[in-house]
Length: 268
Image (cartoon, rainbow, N blue to C red):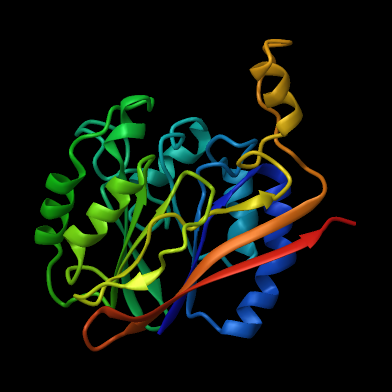
């Protein structure tokens, strides 16, 4: 069994790139299901119901999130719905909207999808995050037989050290630990010694000639002290589409292989 995990989709341009690139990737690699990081889908901050529906129609089966998940009110009821394939960080404190993980029904069987928030980015999030190690322990203990064919953990965090450590901590316990949030793909995709696929940061989908998807001209002017304007997403020039393909051994629930896939092109 194989699945694709797509990095942060940045706004309108990222959605356009996804529509352009995903069909070809599906035809070439034939994944059994596709997951995408939805944290930046709507104007760079969260995801609304309209864009959620658009991406599902493009063939995305499940969505992870992060510190912006509560920015769009119309998506929040889906966080409570066990059948809606979109997560919120599992290590948000009790009492926040949403359940800690989702079960996806795929053509090959049930897949557990979990998002964890790093504690560094979690300090500045709308909701401070709990210790992710404690919460993932509780979740894995709560999952009852029969074993899902795959358990996929997304780690949305700032520090590479956090992302590396969570991978080592969960090695042999889950199918994959895939990091995101920094939008820059790391050169460390590999199968860990216990059989878990790991990549510290999968990167993003959006403008390549940008700063993490944001127009660099605005950032430079602000850095020089010439203006204090807000960030604007870049929607021109060269684009990038970054994802990983994971091959799963269904007999063990661990990974056989992980491959970083990077596509680039020019608008127009």
